[in-house]
Length: 57
Image (cartoon, rainbow, N blue to C red; front, side):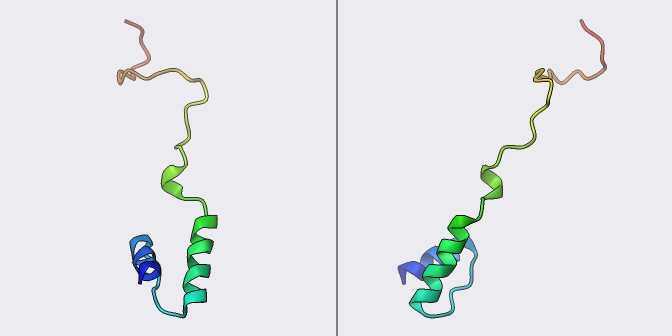
């Protein structure tokens, strides 16, 4: 039951025997999670103050 709960939380199918459920969880663990990967950061490293007209004040 705990395996199925974990699968449901991850949005994975819960059908199959115990070995299949464990394998499914392991495969999900091996895949990188997109939400943990940082977005591409600006290459110049400048912080943007939101005023993007190109003029310095």
